[in-house]
Every structure is written in C-alpha cells, then in structure tokens.
Amino acid sequence: MSQTRLQQKEKTRRSIINAAVSQLNEDTSFASLSLREVARKAGIAPNSFYRHFKDMEELGLTLVDESGLTLRQLMRKARQRFKKNSSVIETSVKTFMEFTETNANILRLLFHERSGTTRALRAAVAREIQYFIVELTDYIQAVGYEKDIAYCQAEAMVAIIFSIGSESLAAKPSARKELERRAMKQLRFIATGARVTYLDKGLL
Image (cartoon, rainbow, N blue to C red; front, side):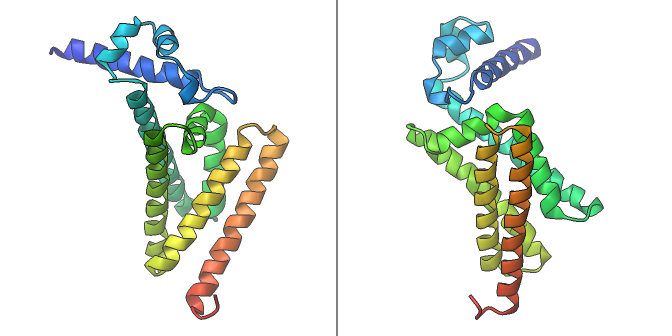
C-alpha cells in the first residue's frame, strides 16, 4: 500500500474516531451510538466503516485506549510542571479540571463505559484506571514511600479525582471551582495520612 493510501486510510480512521467522540454528551453514551450515524458524521458509507474497525465494540475499545493514553500523558506533564511550581496536588488537579472542561466527551466516554453494558469496554476502562494508579504509585514511590503505602495512596487519589471529574461535567463554572477546591483538600488529607502512616506504621 502506497504512503498516500496509508495516509488516507489513517485520515478516514481518525474521522470515524472524531465522529464518535463528537456525538457523546450528557444523554448519549457510546452504547447508544449507531454505526450508521457515526459513518454519516465521518462522511463515509456505512460499509466503509468495516475497512477500519471490525465493529462498534472495536471502535469503542480504541476510543477508551486513546482517551486513557491522552489523559495519562497530560497528567505526566502536570507532574513535570510541578518542578517549577509549589504543589503537585494543585498543579495536577488544575490540569485535570482543565482537561474535563475542554475534552468533556472523552471523559464522558470513560465515565459512562466504566459501568456500561459492554463487558469489554468496562474491562478496558478498568485497565486504563489501573494504569493511572500504577503510574501514580511509581511517582509516589520515587518520593521515598514503600510500595504498599504508595499504592494505597495512589488508589485513593485516583478514585477521588475521577469522582470529582464525573461531577464536574455537568457543573456550572462556580460549582467547578468548588469541586476543584474540594479535590485538593481531599487529596491533601490522603497525602497527610499516608505520610503519618509511613512514619508510624502501627498507627493505622
């Protein structure tokens, strides 16, 4: 296959992905999307869809993988920015909240399919969340914590940030600011508790 044809194929594949994401909203989950509507939005015939994806489930898995990767890369950059700022928690929460505002449909995909009707998509979202936990665990361990404490701290932090993120999708700007402040407080409580536990392992 020539380079031009490969580029065109990738362009069409990207159009399908973007078409699916653009149709997600507060009332529309991925499970409710139709192949025909996605194809129409992408500007292709329905049969052409199968040249790029086996079925809608494969498209959904691709969306989950790409969404999770995009968000993980963003949070890595946030932790790198911490080197120039005073608080890794503040930087990370602000970065995540900015992402939920500018990429709401990507977050909706992860939140909806986390408890959706398709087992494969539920498993894919669970896997992406686990990636978040593992990466954060590694970061916390690098600060000097033991693995078990680092993992527990990371797991609790990821649960909070995803919960706040889910609430933020339908929140007004003033409410989003309050959610942001609440997330920072909760994450600091967890960080403080982890620090105390590490210093006195018999305390908890």
